[in-house]
Length: 165
Length: 165
Image (spheres, rainbow over the protein chains, first blue to last red):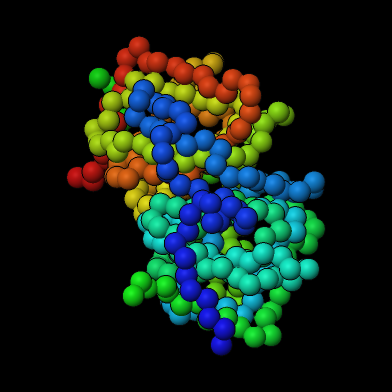
């Protein structure tokens, strides 16, 4: 099986696919009499011409590494943000588009306190928490028209943790 | 000082002020080959005629009870959702409107895994986590026009934990 090694997520490495949402650097604004920092408007949201923003919760079974990747999906009508509601890293699999199908995937590991926003139309694996409770708030497009495209791989990938030698 | 006892938050009790966002009951949809439940579109978002949705992070100093409440604020142009990124309860202070000023406040305590969405224009206290890291994703209105009204209380309230006798 083809292998993919995990990478630690960074805003720069993830930029072709979406936004890494994290507390990094000084806050854009100090509010609440100095007791709160606001890191302002950190995701490129796009819900298409006929959609609108919504907040849903996803509760997903925790997975473990190595993880077999046999399907990627994308949402042509909107961006999709995954906000973990526990301080646990999770696995974010994404791929560039290669002529209407996913190209070679990349597998990012988040750190605690990080969320991601997938840009509209980005190929990605399903939500893969690595720890219970696997609870996420999801900000994505609410709308009446179809918004899911799946691509099953004829040959799966095995995602393995990249442990320094 | 006037006292307010905390209440455990419920969707019904919180309904006049906003939405309690939680995994409760069966999911609206099972996705990802049976491995994930989607609790769909659980917040009434409203960003006004000139605003749009954004995701920001708030990092706030943890507080403790009893807590002195001396100010409430509201956002006339949009709803505001607070999604904790750790499994910690937090304090949510809200008040009905009484002729353009906050009426008698109520103090709700969340349980782990719960988020809230304040409806547009709801009077509320500032973000009051009770535990570190005090990290929240906030889904609120991004826009150019003013969206904050503060009301300082001439006589503060003391919010105390309601411990059963």
